[in-house]
Image (tube, rainbow, N blue to C red; front, side):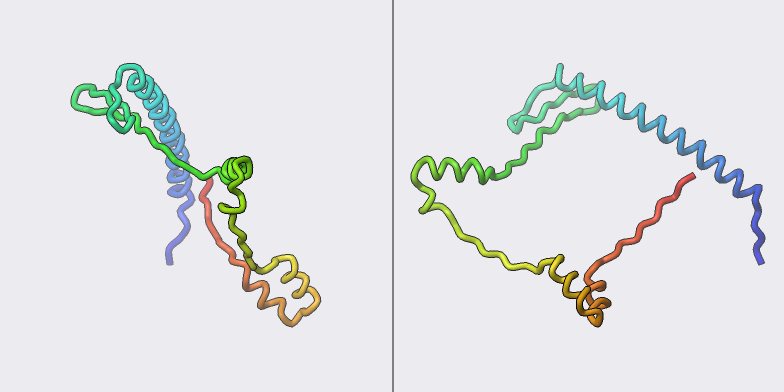
Length: 132
């Protein structure tokens, strides 16, 4: 039977904490270098046809990548359609049916025989974190 070696685990825990602190220091340094390189790319780089900015330094090409996302502003579009007399032509009526969680819980409260079934509708996710 294996025995608990407190000295071994104390050394391992101490080493873990030191490595974790070292890792945090490296992350801070990486972030500082990234910020400095980003400034250089913005200042000295050349944009391409997609709007990305490139800077070649030695054998390395740095890129400040342009990312664009679009979302539909339904409120602005609705206001425009109404202002221009197009609302009736462009609107849609949507009916959505879904279960009411409050009504379901109220039903389960009054009908105890379905409580276990209703509790089964709640999904639990378990995660673990290691702290030292």
